[in-house]
Amino acid sequence: MIRLEDVQKIYRPGREISVPALRGITLEVTGGEFVAIMGASGSGKSTLMHIIGCLDRPSGGRYFLDNEEISKKGDNDLAEFRNKYIGFVFQSFNLLPRLNALENVELPMVYRGVRLPERRKRAEEALELVGLSDRLRHRPAELSGGEQQRVAIARALVGEPSLLLADEPTGNLDSTSSAEVIEIFCKLNQRGITVVFVTHEEEIAAFTRRIIRLRDGLVIEDRENRPPRGYAVNAGEVSCS
Amino acid sequence: MSFWEWVKIAFKSIGANKLRSALTTLGIIIGVSAVIALVSVGQGASQEISARFESMGSHLIMIRPVRSAGGDLFIEDAYELEERIPSIEFAVPTVNFSATIKYQNKSYDTSVEGVNSGFPEVRNHNPVSGRFLIPQEIELRSRVVVLGQTVVKEIFGSQDPLEETVYIRGQPFVVVGVMEAKGTTMGVDSDDIAYIPVTTAQRLSGTSSVNTIYVKAKSAADAKIAVSHITLLYSKKFPREDAVRITSQDELLTAIGETTQTFTILLGAIAGISLLVGGIGIMNIMLVSVTERTREIGIRKAIGAKRRDIMGQFLIESILLCVAGGFIGILLGVTASRFISRVAGWTTAISPGAVILAFAFAAAIGLFFGAYPARKAAALDPIEALRYE
Image (tube, rainbow over all chains, first blue to last red; front, side):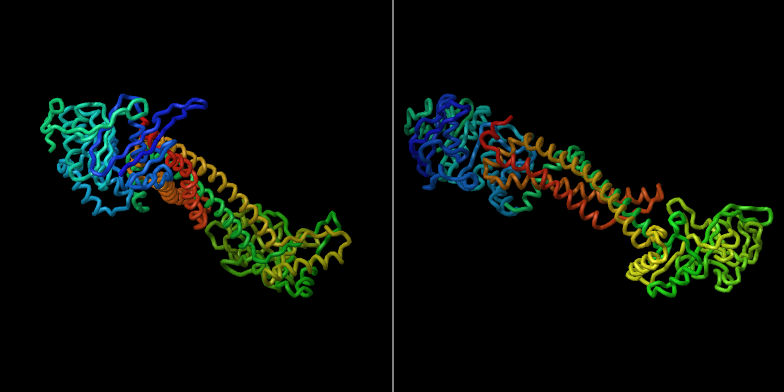
């Protein structure tokens, strides 16, 4: 599914200054996994996420997604990969404020060229899946943080991606909403979607089956995890089995 | 992604900033309407001048002797031209002077023109009541007069002037006809005139020569031939080349046409500049819009928008603004042109060419000035764009 071979990323904010964000990451994620990437800020986890999400290209090493070498692709091909294979969930939701929930969810299909009746139907289904059937016409400003993030998840999965990426998806949410979001991720993973997310909250990472820790641009820990049953994320109840 | 999706997105973002969109479009509206209105004024002027010149008689050639250069022409010269040059249809010798016309206790200063019976044909000017001078009256030096409308109005008011006797330089003249109204051409009242036989005019002013010979050629092509014939004829007759001045109406018309066209182009260009300024306004606001929507662009890119999707969205937005401006501008320009023609009394002519040109120019401005902001938007790095606050 995902294979990174000695992936490096060096930022050059100015001449003679180079900031290495990733210093050689090698890892493989197979289809259907549920992975948390952890690390302190500055450890390179966001950069890694951007590379896995085809938003950025590594400056060294190779990255394969579904056996296609992404590191060699052009901007348009990357856009197409993002559209077809990847669903993104961001910490700050990143919904378009002028569009209602339904239109926001439709957006990836607009860029894929899906016709209106078809994409409307699929958007409705996706919103139903995240439990927002009664909020279709609401704009982001009229929704709570948790609801906004659920809309964002619906948008991420409406294109039936093989990989769902989330960057601190619960970072801006209260504990109840966090629990709901995690529960949705669990369910999606059970349906066979590969889920990878970045977090710094141990309680959230605990629900995944694999935890990868980064420090200073290197993998320092990569271990399996057994998610607990009926575990409580702070105050919120999560049932995922 | 289809073209219509781009159009839909563009419409949405225009609708989201209604006031700003309207103000931006205003630049284009003013530009397009200015082009249309000003060009219509120019074209109207050109048409009016041409029409007036044509009403003076088509294929007209004027021959004026220049006394100081030894030129002198007589009535016989006119008849010689008619006989010897086949391309000439009529030649009318004229003598003019100003005189006071008296009727009962009223008097009026006007210009008196001695002409022959061919005058109505040559100058395209006919009597509206009574008749014009006839050949016998020319031969017999009759004291008959045909009056212009202004003279009739000044002397007779609403009274019928036919068969009345007026005095010109103390001599009694019978009014035999009244000419049709011709109006004012470039500040000269063409109806402020009285026509008498050229022979009578010569006797009254004590001269044997003529002031001008008006010649009518059979066609436009003949006018050119006639001019060269006349030139040749008089170059033999007079030692000096400038003894007679030969002016062809067609040539004059061409020259005036060129002048008015320059005038129209100048007006159009001034208006075009305002259109250009409108275009810069579009570019300015599109650049602001791209900056403002950096995050939106980042989101769209992250979920799979390609370069051309973003480019198309912004380009179509700017073209839509310009085309809408162009459309409203046409309506406004046509209204303004009508208004000018009503209030100022000028003739205006809206040419479809100017309308199409202004509209196409507006659309092209949208494309041109939208291209840079759209490229800028399309080239944004998605990660940078997503970080933008």
